Length: 373
Image 1 (cartoon, one colour):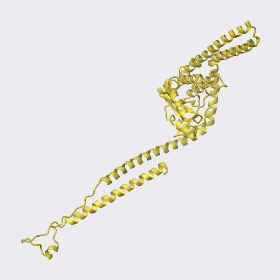
Image 2 (cartoon, rainbow, N blue to C red):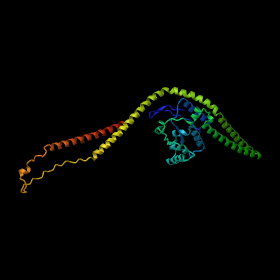
Image 3 (cartoon, one colour):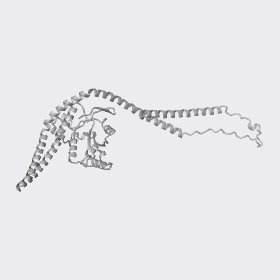
Image 4 (cartoon, one colour):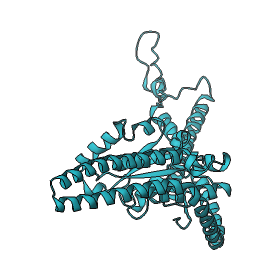
């Protein structure tokens, strides 16, 4: 099932929700057929996946045989080369205590039987907190990723393999054979017990054991039939999904055109925001530099040398008239030049203050435009 396309970070995003291999209403063979048919159809039409998300409930007490089996098939679907585009997302965090959840998370990430092998090859593990913001944060890890061809797409389309001979098909076939072998072993044990019941003429036990034998035989037959029909039913499933995908694309065509226009505007806004952020950062650096220069610069006041008192030839103090008479400046332009330099210095300081205030005002304005405060 595909979601209606939506915009995230200027990209048009479509989510594909695939059934899990632990579905109680459908066999693993049916699920693999459905997933493989959809992926091969979209790949033939030129579409590639930007990322793959594998969901795991952190509330599960352990990663048992079913979960481990499902993850092995998942790995064969993806292939080793696409693991950098894989996100392992843990859910149901509200169902466990933080301590227990973190302990299970560490075990999943560090145990070679669980997720460690794929994490070592570039996959990432994230948490989903059941909020819209959390979901968008997870998707942002993938929306700009380079799309890759999945292993099963390459095998089905480029190599023209039938489903049973793909890596995922071979793995599922092996798992089905293991299941059949286990049922065969259990069947032998039940038949031995039934023979013993017949020997002692325990009719009630014999009937109960016969029912178990019938159930085991039916299960073995179902497993074998699923394995044999994998390739044959794949062709029909692929044709059915191909028609369905065409109908969905037709229905979404107008919606996609509108989305593309909105996405283009959003990309332009994101680009403008990036430019404004760089400008604000540059202005902040200039402001910091100007403030530093202003605080470290010291003004040294000019001190006029006080004229020494002129002593008479007899060493006596000059009379009052001589003492207070104005003395001609040896350089008449000296006072004017000093005043001019001081005025120029004051103007430079005022200009510097005005520049700093202008920078500060610009930074504040840009920050308000970007951040809204």
